[in-house]
Amino acid sequence: MADLIHLNYLLISVINRFGINLGFGDKSVQEVCQEHDVNLDFFLEIVNSFHDEDYLPEEHLQDFSVGLITDYLSKTHRYYLDVKIPELEKLIIMMVVECYANNKHATLLESFFREYKNELIAHTKREDEKVFPYSIATELAFLGKDNSLIESTAPGGYSIQEYSSEHDDIESKLYDLKNIIIKYLLPTGNQSLCSKVLTELFNLEKDLNDHSRIEEKVLIPKVLLMEKKLKTMK
Amino acid sequence: MSKTGFYIASKSYLITKGLESLLREIAMVEIVGKSDSSFKLLENILNKESDFVIISEDMLDPQTKSDLKKYFPYKNKPTLLYLKNSRGYEKAESFFCDSINLYLSKNELLKELNEIIESKKPAGKTSSKSSNLSEREKIVLRHVAMGLTNKEIGEKLFISIHTVTTHRKNITQKLGIKTVSGLTVYSIINGIINLEEVSK
Image (cartoon, rainbow over all chains, first blue to last red; front, side, top):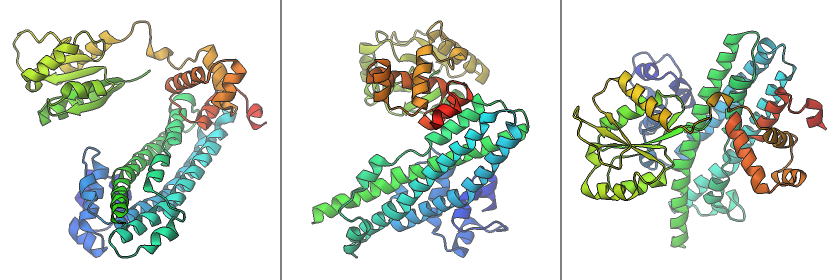
């Protein structure tokens, strides 16, 4: 497991999401996963797809239950909202004071970031409260266990197709923020703070891209397929 | 300025990976697609909006050759590049515009590719000028930043929605900013509008 982190330190945040803490000594990935009651195969697919964009685990990931996938996605949401966003917010407030003291417009960055934050909160909330429960309900119905949940999670009918078409892109604002800092603001003070903020933004963007990739390439097709089969069964 | 798009066509895993990593080192270049089979190669190439297609020798079976001959070099875009795997000087098929040699060193390859990319660039457009908006674009940006919709902007400036969309596309491309609030921040920082106007 330690080798894994040495290979790609960005994975630290990913293993955190699985509830795995540092200090695992020389234990293998398998041992650590067992200890923390983490599905080893699932863990490996997620880690691989995060590490290497060309690694296409979509087919493998399709084998895992919707519950497992949405659980990971929800944990990722929590990580964004509870850890990353507050961290970045603090950094940006600091940056405005320390780097752009001479630019009276720099405070706009703060409000811009807050707008982004609200967008992200709304986005994750909708997924956590609507899309994920609906996906789980669809799977239950598909497995023939319980047909009643679909109606309660999605009153009046809903299709994952709707979600897929309105799956708004939460990366645009982040992209803009990066470019404004990179291209259009001249820092006069603490340069290293600016670099730090940018690095964090890039990392968050990569993380978000990976996250959306799992939603769009794994979750949506999987639920779509079950919806289709459920319809033909009726 | 928009990126130069490359398409890689080779059966060889090593060649594909090698080209990818090489192209990533060149600024403003992106890989828009790749193919590891010559089946329907022409169709695949035409489907992707690329500027250059690098084709290695192993892709050139008779069918593919005759497909390619029909379209190239008469078609303006993309430009086909031949990746030859020998030091020889044998003549490449006529549909290729240029060739690169598989056995060149990294620096030689980078130099050749850069020259090829430069030679195809439209003259007169320099990248440093790109963030300069035209007067018309600035006016459109001003209205966008104030929160007007495309329709409202069109009505105000007596231009069609279509024209407004085109202006907005160009603005976004030049500035590298996609969202309305991002454009507003840019406009305020650069004095295109002032804060009081927005908060009205």
